Length: 381
Image 1 (spheres, rainbow, N blue to C red):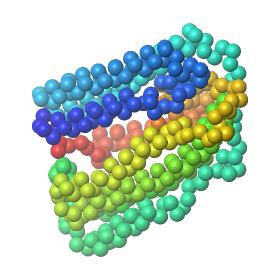
Image 2 (cartoon, one colour; image 1 turned 90 degrees about the vertical axis):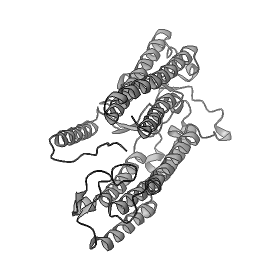
Image 3 (cartoon, helix red, strand yellow; image 1 turned 90 degrees about the horizontal axis):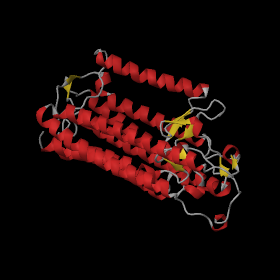
Image 4 (tube, rainbow, N blue to C red; image 1 turned 30 degrees about the vertical axis):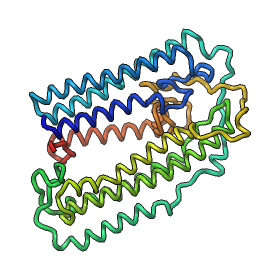
């Protein structure tokens, strides 16, 4: 395992460990490890102990598995060791998270935390009558990047060499060269088109999904949720521009317009770093559902006397999976981490979509293993 492999190992394991360690802090206070808790129990000593134990376990797993992966990489293929170690780390952290969720459920049941509470659900119809919209003009920058990439590609098409670089390594010039053809040369542009379309469709689906309104403070949470959706749409459109800029850089390198240097690689992927910074800023300043936004002066004392209905029975795998046949919503907010959604697998549309996605992934893996299609590979830098 050389210096580059070691640096990649440390960066990857540190990122995964930090992400899992931060999950409880990114989640709204009324959901603890995917379990609904009443507001007056959010700071319960039992929950504090569970959070502390979870944080310690995540850090110990990160350090321990990083050390084991480093040792394995000394005696086996470093790339294979890194991939296996990272996969094991994610699975182990998920298991620790699920165990923490079980501990919260046990404490909640033992203390009968919802006894004496008035549970309820409140809907805000203004999200239907006056919905947050995804402006077409917001896609203009992303589409401009696509158009510029297409124009450069058309100008370069007549002078492309017989083969194109393999795009591996730190300079995006390693690996075997591939024969020049439409699909190989146009791959980055097709990815830009697909990503831009997917961004639009996902954002439209999100703003039309059911808002997450707290029954105890419906007016405050509705206002925050609307501001949250507006900020999320802006973040999604900015991310699409950044991703398209990176794909444009990859295209210019693939067409051998940009030189094969480490500086080129850094420049190509800098937009993704910018997008990541915007995403972190969004989570820290806005938060899931807008829960980090400050309350308005007239919202401080809002209290309906209700507690959000306990629907734990419909949530599985630590708040990652939702299945409720009586819920008309197809797309719902996850209970885990930051701004993430999941399909309602109890709804026919959600279930069908989930099956189709799983089938597509399985088919890609099988066809890739059979050599029918080429899947992305991780090669040594």
